Length: 329
Image 1 (cartoon, rainbow, N blue to C red):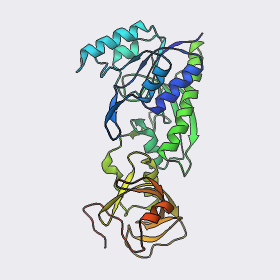
Image 2: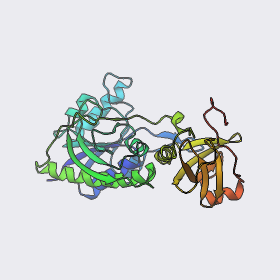
Image 3: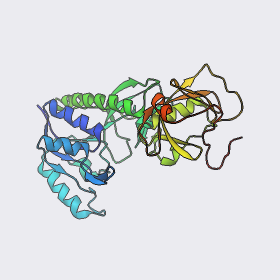
Image 4: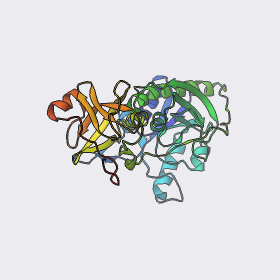
């Protein structure tokens, strides 16, 4: 027996999941997604990835600004409730939706609401699990299918699968791998649920951590940190928001780098450029040296280092900016 599934999600991660459910044959009578948002240089309203997909499949879409009947938009929430009830779904699948689900939503489908979460719970509950796993230097991550409750990613675990984090992974590349894995795992979960074979396990009390939303202030590189820490953050914030530094008053956005184990720091001057060639821009850190391999000037294009250096001359001895309260020594 295939289930009737309401899907709630917004970005590309969600689109991969709903497309996987559709391809597996599940009936999707309704999709919930965030309202259209201004995007691009012209700030034109743009539909979410999930809405664009749903409309291409002629699936009804609802975009309430809230689902709280006692909240700021009670009329929208009430209308959404009528729409959700009319869908007569067995289950709601949620993936990066962006709205908090009140208790009436959690209770409405007979199988409740299942969440596709991009971490190995209880590690990295919260908004930015992929970013934080890379930033922390985790060796692995994965996807957890969770029965949603009123807490923040605290519900019982239904299925879990691990995935290794490669040293070259960025949030962009890891996102794409986890999106595919999430789509596969939610299909498996619903197939088990349809025949009563889905078992729930409470999350362990040990090992809880929170993946707080990324603040743009975190993107400023402090070259006094170790090369290993900076490389992880650079990859964690790639593609968004990117990490930033300055050179002679010009802002540079940095995306990719590697640790250079051959070059040795020449002085106690974090942020100093030691070498700049097509292999990368070697920069001294508080501990060790890294090589920047992909970067962007303000108003320019994101470029591999070889292309960047054709238009910008960087010389050994130049110093990349420290936080505003600091100065090069």
